[in-house]
Length: 426
Ligand code: ADP
Ligand code: MG
Image (cartoon, rainbow, N blue to C red; front, side, top):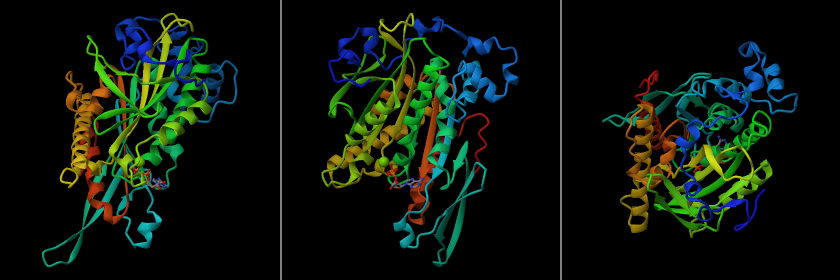
């Protein structure tokens, strides 16, 4: 139920107790030994009691899970939910996925070539870069990359969801903080890729809340803000400027950020639309400026300590979607306009810091260098404790974007280059 500011359902941090004020923190101490009723090792008791759960056919598992309810969306949600009995440990901590968009009309009319080839059903991708020899004859240099998944131009948004976010949805009921980033140059498909994901995820979250986790006091909260030029703006509250504070426990909180408690997909759809229409647009009228901002949409699962509706709820887990600023904007550091230069420097700093934070996570480093930028400071709680990160790197296929495409792929490769079992080759 969406309500306006001041109504009971809107959790305005300033109105709440200090514990709730830091809505970006997870009080692990408090929650760590808090039993979740009806759960045994993270699965509902009726499943835990089923002796051969592993041997159950998915359809049977589904009907058991839902206590006879039908009409669950056809997806892998429950499959991943069953994996979740080991606290989601089977879901990779960091996953790097590349998505290639089709050539657009303009590129086709300019007779630009598609320079990216992807072997069907493989996780390999090759960029064919045309270069000139000293005698000015052309030759093609091949750059080969491997990622956790490589999605070609025929892959639908539904399939992107299944590959990226769907497996991590159940983990957020298990006190995990999960983050999904879209990285890439402006026009590579970040927003196209990112936009449908939170809605699909909310659908799955609500399904779990209403069925598998029925009557256990879980609540879903929605917030949407933007980082522009190092400053925070609430996209659901007339772009109100927000500030970030650190409390005595070094927990980060965003003061004034509006959170909406949501219980149906329609409301979520409206909030997403409202937030998107509030994203920064340039004075020129073009959507140009949104490429200089990071949009952060968060779905938080909360639960009151005893599971009752009347008590204030605390964060259990969180799923964040981040439509990053255009990666090429980080290079705007020599622009004539001072404002543009400063924004470029901030974007550059945030993308570099983000990479370092994810790498630190991947290496199980104790020290996470989140202090490098506003973006990583805001996401601090997503980098500590039990976390999952999905990086979707978007690339344009046209020859004119070759340099940006290679930069994006190298960034993606660096994010995960040290991970165990990563078989990236170049
Ligand atoms: P970005 O957010 O990275 O700047 P957009 O998501 O706005 O890029 O995409 C640029 C254009 O390309 C948009 O018109 C979008 O609809 C189109 N586009 C992007 N990815 C795809 C895709 N996979 N299939 C079809 N069209 C796409
Ligand atoms: Mg965009």
